[in-house]
Image (cartoon, rainbow, N blue to C red; front, side, top):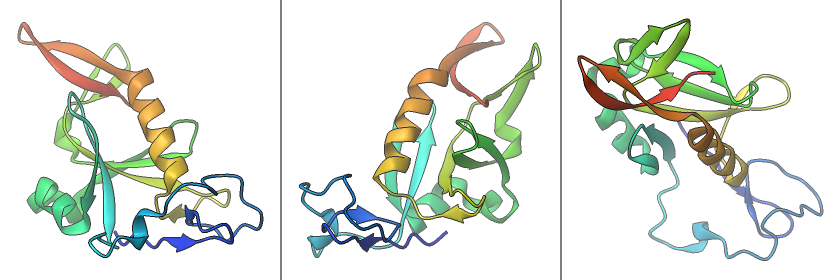
Length: 147
């Protein structure tokens, strides 16, 4: 998954070309750092939070299942989680993700698009609202409700 960021008119990092964008207009642009990797992915790791990784770093996490991952719309249809289906369990008609998931944003037209600061904020909110633990064989395991 290739992430394409642009600077908007106010020099904020964004995946949209919005005029007079109020988001991040006064924030420094991390893309100005020559060490910044232009191809990034956002990954949720239940129990470990959210990480921004290079695209190759994300592929390393998912290794052999990268091309066969399943996807779910979550967070009121604003985020798309890609994950290994073997990392999902269901109890009492609720599905829980036990492993890592790669996150992308869904735009107003239903298209998957590059992550931006809004995606990061929305993902952190989603994780905070849905992070829980499930009991598997008497052991409590961090999990993320898929809703």
